[in-house]
Length: 123
Length: 264
Image 1 (cartoon, each protein chain N blue to C red):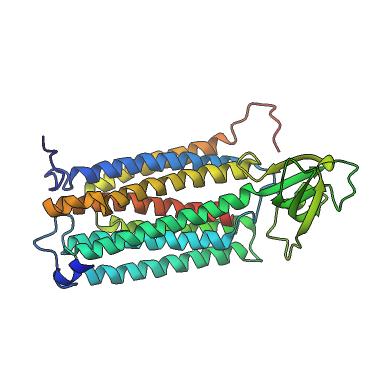
Image 2: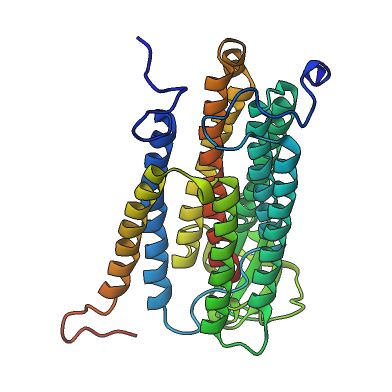
């Protein structure tokens, strides 16, 4: 940690303009944001745990609730930690294609589940 | 030959090439894990009611691993921020933390695997004088030289009693000494045991391999790769960002693996 003593002040902005982000990077600002994200993740995990043990919910409702919380959690992580809320158009285009193919992958699988030949015995 | 746009963004895309590369790679990774998740959906939905295992995982350890990975994602981001503000000491600290957390995650996962692989379901012969037709528990002694095995577990009469463990509270486990002559067959709770465990081991092992791969890259940047910092700090920072994006993706995958395999 000797470099810490000789480095610039902790909250010093980036030397020159950042090429990746339009605003200069502020260490303390990021640290605060990370604390918020971690708290959000802890809350999401707690919610999922509570949802999975809810006694008066039927199973599909529980699964739906857990998946909604998991998706929200993923959005927070991807949005803030991967900077997806302020990315370049190129990345969004790439992700749109990925989402399309991913939806196809899951959708075709679900669709194929009912696609049995006539006379097939199922459970 | 110098690789173009490794540091500065391309004018047409607005980002440097390695970042485009990692996002393309992550897109392929989404399809890889997507295939496994679709397999899970197919098998899960196709399983008759009451036959899908519940409560087979240690939720406490799964939760702990979720928090460990979330924390490591944050330390990875802070390592990149430290590079951006040119504080290399902080970078070393945060990436060191990431490595330790990754190691913690793998250790916990290894413990869980060991727990499954030493857990046995033993089917007994019809004439055995035991408390049930199946003995289920963790192996304590399995010496081929001896004519018995010892497990810490319980007897059950029906395999169905082992499916939903969440609905069973206060399961009493005792040490059971079972003569080999009374054993019809026995099998550990490995990936060969049933569809659920096959999916569990495949998905979590692939994820653990990604953790291992990411740790190697982060370890390289933390160790020998840090030489680049002295020559070209912006280039080094970009490398840290790219490795961080991969690490966040691995965290994202776990965010879905945890509820799917531990809670549903």
